[in-house]
Length: 541
Image (cartoon, rainbow, N blue to C red; front, side, top):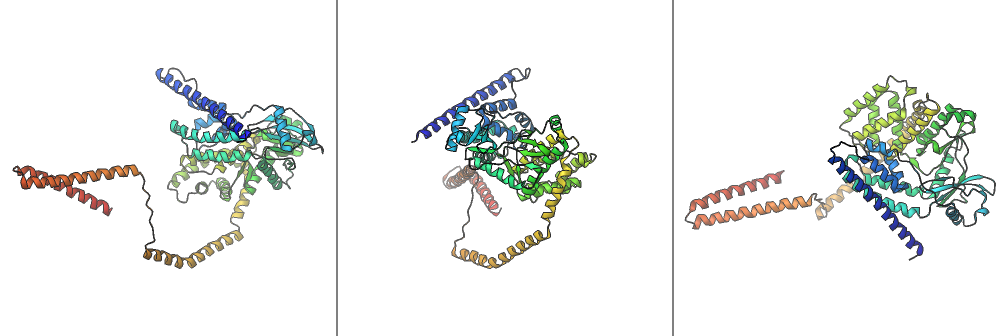
């Protein structure tokens, strides 16, 4: 066994011990707090509520859990509102590794000393995150760049964290039913796949190159250049972006920028990603956006992206048009179709709630409606009806809400609704394009022709297997323990009845007290007829 494997195993044991101690500590404090509260009959408030205790535990568990908690905060289909409000207080923070260790890791990934690649290298960490930390440098060619290096042994740590998360998800659901979890273990797996992608910096580099292709002809958006010659799985070298923060209006104006144009450009950039390409930056908060000269928008941190299926893009277009026309039926159909449900038996109730939502917004001019807030209300409504919403839609709702929030700071008069409408109309036109419809009709006809051709052969095969006795029927037994218990009870009752019947017959023939034998025979006969009738009746059912 290699020394690195032994060291990795040792780190896993240390991490497991650390997590276990944190969980036990807070579980004990929660239990003690509840007992103390019950003894005092609510006279004094618990030191921490259950929601606060959960947040504090997540913060102590570390960056992986903090990131997962932040995702849960945007998922009303998984946890209740009071837990979500508490988890929104989670702040990403990570203590940086020493600069000396980071430089050693960078040189290891480059395969050469730093001064052979960089003319200048700032040895002081610029920023630190859960997976890696960032340094500022200048290539020998003169380009200013950002160098992002991954933390050592982070992959093993995250994999262990994910394993424990699955366990904790199961235990938490049992302990706190108010979490109202829907497939939380599946959510952990989804999160695991996402964060493991972030561990591969080639994935982030690929995202940057893809966005470069999307915005190559758009003068309002700048995507940083990535230097693939120096990029590895654990090292990312990309262009340094210089600009202003988008949420500081005074600074933007003093730099000669137009806050309203910045808001419109930012909204258009996100909507182009979503409604034209179905591929978008999933974390567009102000810290990940810079405003460059001429009101140009530049995004950074492309590790987390969202991908929309055509059905989800069509939903957003239908939703926008339905809302603009105040058509509750169209909105209901868009939401139900998004959830993959063909026949929804509570459609009337859903339409009624949506019509009430439309009435409440009917007195507000369309240009002033908070579109992101309306969409979030609809998502919450769908969750109450226990329908399953694709996870990409929650990421989209969060992205829209974030853009709306920072756009409001730049220009209180701006609304996403009017900006979305042209994109939505283009999607609908593509959806009902005569050429596309003709293609779908052709595919449908071709499917029926294939069915007509193969049906006689399929029927002949089924009949042949029936004649040969090769058709098998699989029976799935549910609740096997309960069935075996009932079967045993019935068998025992039948045996008891048979014994009683035979015993009463002997008494009638041989006993001098024949009245006792007749009574026993009558009772056993009635019981036997009752059992026989029950079996016949059940068989007919």
